Length: 474
Image (tube, rainbow, N blue to C red; front, side, top):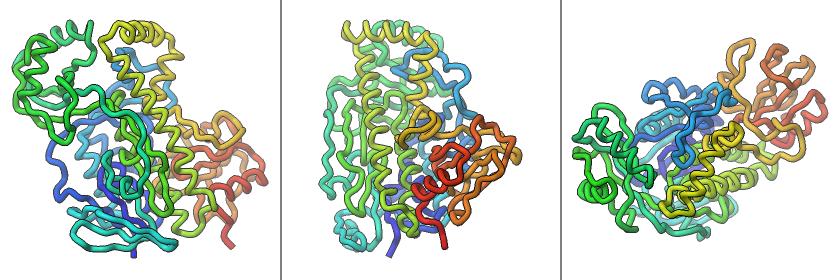
């Protein structure tokens, strides 16, 4: 019997498996595909996801395979520079091939002891008070204490649960792919700039060596399960730009629509949902992969605590309470961005107005913090502004804060010299550092890096240790 079975070994599933293994949870990841994806799709890790990689000691490996870009120009592709002084030691975008992210996260999970089985498709489930029986497509039946569906927008797990997935179907569609172009870069840049004066939906982003990521409006809405052809791209490029730029040798081709849906529930008994299984939205702002990885980071330590037996009664319920509103906000901002890409006069007027407003630092900063998730604040009740927010990677006497979070444990960062984690020391670390770059006397960090308490009173601290880390050990 497994502690957790995860359906889907994409970025969300692999990240979750690794987080669970940090706490010695027995994990099996089932991936229905027999081989990793063959196409190389470049995605962007935003600031908060980069921070999470740093927290688990993965960032250096990611940096070896990625390219850093300024953290600006994400919202509706409005070309504004990144605000100065973003509250992060990692204030950049990391462009990296998605298969590389999946491979590195999967290798990380396996190194920690997770099992990954390819060609294992979930076909049925039945849960009771003790666990979940998972039926595979080949007839095999597996038993687990918990099941997590990380199996994408068409999630089998979500459908088997009967969880509602309300929202809007796709009304427009875009073609997106990576391919070589047969005309000089200067000619491409000039033509794209001309078209984008009236239609921002066209994009040809250079990756070097004559390869471009091409985004162009589709002729209509079709079945996303069927990838477009290179001729579809050529035809639509000629229709929109008057030329197909001589595109050839595609790496991968796909289509996406503006379908936007959010699961009504993230948990039904012993079965949970994360990543695209819980929410889908257009790729505006490049938030999808990041949102799923951050779901996994929020869920992992809570589910592990439940399995290890020290979770407070309501801890697992905070997964939906915290992540559902974050996803709803992402859905709203992608709806807004898609509207701003319309060629209709009304949305274009709003886009011009927002472009002016983004010259104000406060507006630009707010939108960048929203897209990159550094502005997320969970509702932990009344308290200082830092409460519920993530803490940046600050300087400490013995190095950097995130280097102390690799094991996925809580951390008390104490500048007073008189606080203690006492009988919670089996799940919470304590660092006494009067020189820490903080303007508060002490903070209690959850394993996901969010601030669970701020202050200098031991009695208050004990109450918050109980709230997040359960009863103290005997």
